[in-house]
Length: 223
Length: 208
Image 1 (tube, one colour):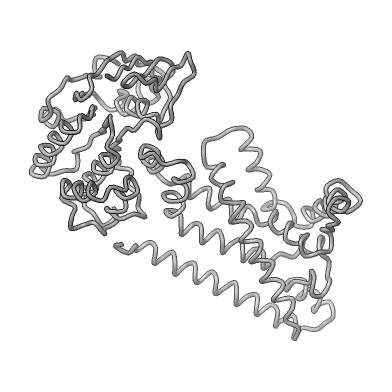
Image 2: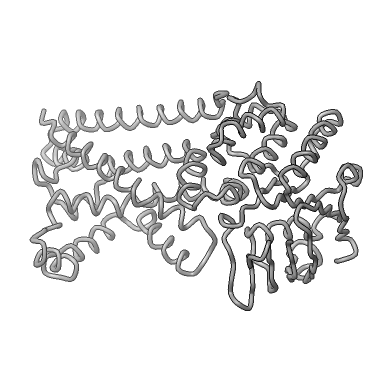
């Protein structure tokens, strides 16, 4: 059995989750602070992957990343970077596709914290960054973990967007979900079952781990 | 000297009514604010601390303009050096009692003194969830004092304390406030509590 699709999937999910922790946390924090028309539009845009068919998103990303048009052409001409049918293209598409899974739970958790936490920190002379880092973030740890695991698990299961952007190039863009589809197409049910079972097991273990962690957090150690 | 001449829009009480405050407080004095719920007591404290913005007016403290609607000056809460005791305490669930004070100051002797003042020496490693209501309230007061503020704003600071602890804490607090020359504004429903402090009373009942 060729394990490269599994490794590629784990690599893609890991990098996507890390990037979304870097991008998604400040973005969620910005969204959680008050309402404005720009924020409503921004939130609607990042929520689109939740409701759009993945093939539609994949189609538009395919057009955007195409070396013949706009962003894709500029990247190709300026940096000699090709996003279509490449691993970096898969990462960018995954970041866009999984963004609501990181931003949504973190934003909700930040909004549920009492306003007085941040206010108390400000009166102690702390900056917004210090308040975010030392007060807000530690107090949404369970939601943060849930968001990271959901993002990772969602990226593991990506199919439509990945197929549209990356195709099925072994070792480059052939992730596990594509390998399952490809194996079924070839009537190789044994391989399809192996890939599916591995994906199922990883996801199940992750979800169980989050439930256990959240239960432990709810009890709360004394110090 | 703290000078307040502002208009505040009240949201909760008499929808959208303007509350006008024009008062001067001497440095080191204690001001006791009484009044019904929703009359703007907490809102006034937040405006003074920089946690809210008055409709218009001027707030000055010791010659420094903290807020001036005409000049578009609005000093951030970080720059006002105001100790604030929140009605719901606003304690950080992730920090122990000691960490709360360490977050506010690096002065270890001062932290020890504060923990002793609040009778929390034996609970230094306890997080707020594992402190009683009274202990949480004391920790909120200690945290506000930790920054050695020029102005201390306390919103219902003694409501969760039993009489014995309240009497001893207030006695210590009065001494400390006087020693440090901290101007103090206390908001309370409880007239008896306020009577334990010397100072002028501002009754919000008549203002709304």
